Image: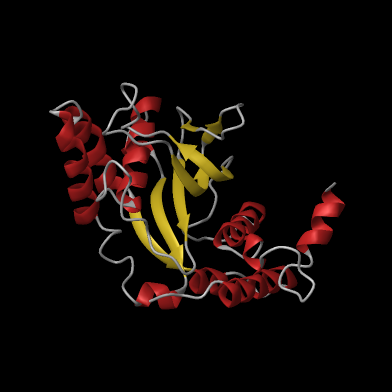
Length: 249
């Protein structure tokens, strides 16, 4: 089966391809290649470096503070899909991929991978609750669920990873900031008539002050890696990703 799938994927981007090249050359697979490299090369000091006993997972589901309370809840949202997660966490044995932070966690990093697109502006029931605010709120909710003090972690972060040209266009700068995220989450809890006020003050705000918010370029990450054949393959893959995913600025 794996050989059959590999044979099909090997045709991606060629004249005899049987599926869109973006099925393989996309930000999801680019992130998986990068995280896999850091997992196997832990001696390199970097924002994406793995702590001892840390793991990674792609497309993990992060539980929301604002899941439905009643059937058809007009304020609710579903779980948030994290492009990549690094650290000390568990994944539910179900097929969904629900993530939970371990009680003794020392590292938890959530990454959002982009190529040509920007961060989503909101959810169906909260149109201004953008992707950065949503991820950080989920992290705060997960830490509260696990009873983990944010100040006890050695590494706590939310990073957007995108092409340098997309970053330089200013597509993310005003969103991945403490002020923007605090304002969006504060607006989000306002419709709950004080139900989440204590969580906001006692958990979310400390997490926001502790978390490292950053925007990393694919180019800077690749430049930080050693010059090896394997890294060259990842660089070539990134080139193909840019070829098939035009950057809109």
